[in-house]
Length: 582
Image 1 (tube, rainbow, N blue to C red):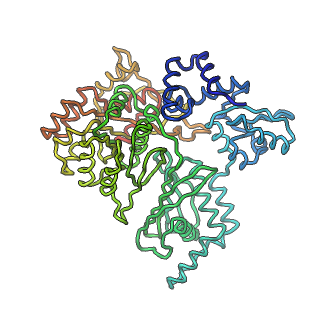
Image 2: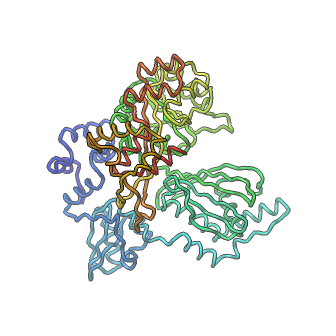
Image 3: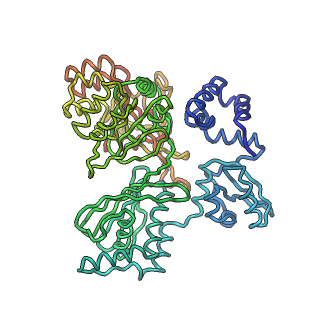
């Protein structure tokens, strides 16, 4: 039971889901890049994953089911053991008499269906579904983090006590022994497993006076996960130090390391930071999925003129594109998405990064290692001898890296990099501070993209209209008249209307979406370096003057882009203001 590519194209044409000329363009791109036809359709945003799976289900004659909001009875879900469900992406969701309906991603997996049939002694009725549906169903297997830890600590409380030992050698031996004990290993594994299931980007383990707090950063917000007894702290920290190959008996100095782990077949790289604090050692772990799927620019949140300007800059063979914003604003993901567009067999792409967050085929990725002298500047100098067409520098941190990046852009390369500035125009004075001559900036810079990440609203949300007092408060941060004009151009406000007439949304708590938000999307400010902007750069204009000129030429600011997304029901005004004011 497999849908052939030719068959899929014919049904796509008949269904009118994708236009004929679009199908042909996708075919050409698939041949050119060596990717699957359906992969190109999804990556380019030409069809939604759900529509594609629905069409496949129709072709195969298998019913389609969406389980994204379904609560599955526990006794039905557990007919298929969790390890098998996770390994084979198959879940039981409905039982009627001797019939068991199962949702799956791969209708060709007849072996698993046969295994479940024998084990359950039921007639198996396969249904096709989406990866999101499978994820929602798999989440329902899990115990809460608190319940899982309560069991571990109740059973093995004695195994996680650590006595203070004055002799350094004995202390190291004792910590090594504790780090290898089963309850400590289970606790560390559970922390990582639950972080992945909760879509956390960071794990914070914080020692307090009488307890240990565990917090997860989810969608950019730190959330309390659980509290552990104080005696668990030395063992957990020791276990993480062993994994990250850090010194067990060093408690006075900060330490940094990394390790890798697997969860249900997915590989993750974990960056570890250990810092001495008043009550012990605080640990922060950053989780990076090694096989993370790339996004296209539309999925990130770019739209309209901003998207066109970004695509135009990417088509230029030389020059520099800068992505700016604070730490955690999604700059690296945007760079990777741009590299994905540029990544064709005809070009040589080289990167210098810290860390390498995603692995990309045909891209030569180099990890910065300052301890052995491999800095961004030294790495970039070496890359230029590797005959690259396109260079990505993870971050411009110093004068030397900035100078090398500008020279690379001058000598026939397309250079992509990031800078820490608050808005797009602020990147220009920042480069001047790094001793780059204004005429060189004007000659090389093609585009500056500034961004923040806002949380996405779930489907359930509450409508409201802005009151006069709210409008007065918002007007401190943006030009309301400009926002109204932009909303009118977007068709979100009638010509004679005002911002009071626009429907905005607030989050609504549901079982599947407790705080009303799930996932994140970017808000952007895209500044193309036009001839008039170049003149201002050469004249040593301030960032404010450059910003004013850019807005006259049609550049939409981040806060204005945020208002458009809020009016479309993607996010809330509170979210936009929160990230802008950070």
